[in-house]
Length: 232
Ligand code: GLN
Image (cartoon, rainbow, N blue to C red; front, side):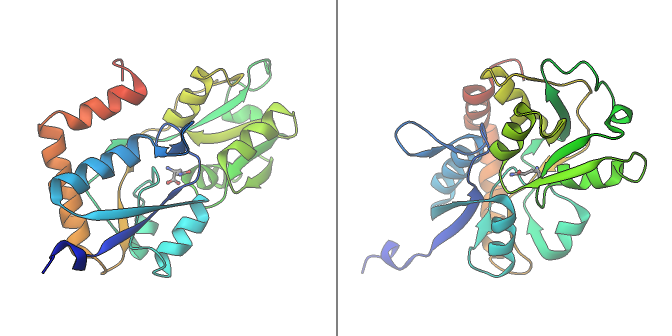
């Protein structure tokens, strides 16, 4: 009998567009740091998976309601999420940063958000940061389901600033998105691969074991270098 035929194919949620972590290339294939890391780990550990790209908040819901087995979406490991999900070991360190239009000379600190409008993505730690800042400064929040919606709103001068993960924002700016980063990124956050609490524990074990292996054999560094260059 073909043992592999009976093996489970894990269904994995990912963000629809979050370059350089997950995005569709010109050939219509999903690529990026997350996709390549999971592919390398699956190969190393001998499991199959199918990606389900969707909006980040939809991914969180899909994971919580068991419509998917796991999620890899540049997803920050937070205490609140750890109550609902089980996370792998951290595989990438990154936190949110504020961005404004390149020609915006007015906003140079969180303080300057007073009276302004900030674009955030539903369910993200960037949205959480904006809510925290609102306790100190008075500004409006515009919510978006996807990152490109936020960027366009700032470019159109509807929102004055956007809060987005630093490597994603830096990558978009490098690809000529006319935004600038007036402040330093927030520190102390890391991305993890997640499963629903108590479910698919073997998948977390395999992810962690594979992560150690691809770090040791250089695959991890190659993937990061492919998307972020050498000076990370
Ligand atoms: N890292 C952020 C979070 O987990 C954003 C993730 C995303 O937008 N895909 O909230």
